[in-house]
Length: 70
Length: 447
Image (tube, rainbow over all chains, first blue to last red; front, side, top):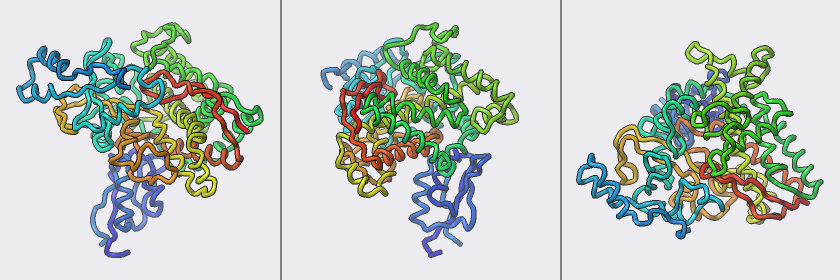
């Protein structure tokens, strides 16, 4: 992705399994059906603007940007 | 609105109260006399008898500090009201400073033994809260909720067709009440034949926030009322129902949440009897009274803002935003309270450990700093920043938000697709509560 892409992470202790991240970015987040905890899947990389939306929408404040893509 | 004012003379009142308390420093005493009392009595259900007190909330939002309501009735302390969007989100997200487990989440105080007898996850803080929430959260993710869509649509279609065939009736009884209870009961595993009983019981729970309580021995109750949620004997009825259903599922497991709760283990232990019944009661109440309130208000919106719904009819891609606007505008849960765990400052207001802080979602949802022209009903209102009808974010963000959004959106779709013409035939009768912005009765004509 572009230079503006960032790597995502989920704090599993804070995650409340609301699934907002998966709804917004199903290629990057998956909420486990049994544990109801989200985790990063695939490349784990998103364009900065879309990453900000996920961080903002996460009700548990569990999603964060951990750094640039590479 | 101002004619209902209580404690208008903030300076005199605060000075009198503070003189009785010697622990304050002089600086705090100065701040104390600047306390501004809320312009209406927010602890009185009558203040909400005609819906959200918009004028009073607007005045409170415009103040530099939080507003104060002095103690009333048997309460030991008054409370601070948060009415702006930004500090509300701060309270909602910071569970260490603003606790759900220390003190009650309703305005009135209850004893600690009553607190623990009632406690469900909504009355707890992380990490205990989060462990319990995860038992059920996978059933309510946006992805999982999509699997309920067909059943929800069928339920809604049948109710609308029946009401239209009758030419109208009580919108709450015919549409707003049975749909959400039907959906949540399906998910929990409560059979259809018992849905009306669940409506009756949860209605009485809300009545526990009103001035018209039930007889203490209703539903065969023998428990002290102070130990029951909403001080209501109906809570006993729900607990007993849950226990019976739980027993049945122990013998005959099914693909439902009651079975899941019966079989669940938290830290290697099964839920206790009280944990299970409190969980069941929370789910039935929260999945029911809230969406019902939005659906009841929707009838009023359809008439009052008909041109906005005409926009949705022409452009169905606006449906999700329209549903969100119905939810913002109705703000079904008016408030939740938190209790301060250590001295802090919020919106230039010094708060002490033990202070009660009340998040008025119904006020923050009309904050003009966040929502352009907030009193305008706008089906194309941007979804960000989010409204706080489901809470201000953080651990307690409404578990059922995706389900509520789906239900309201489908109801809008099905009304518009049928080309139904709705007329309001009676003034809405609001639920007697300062906690739920519900409507009890609303006669409509439907063609």
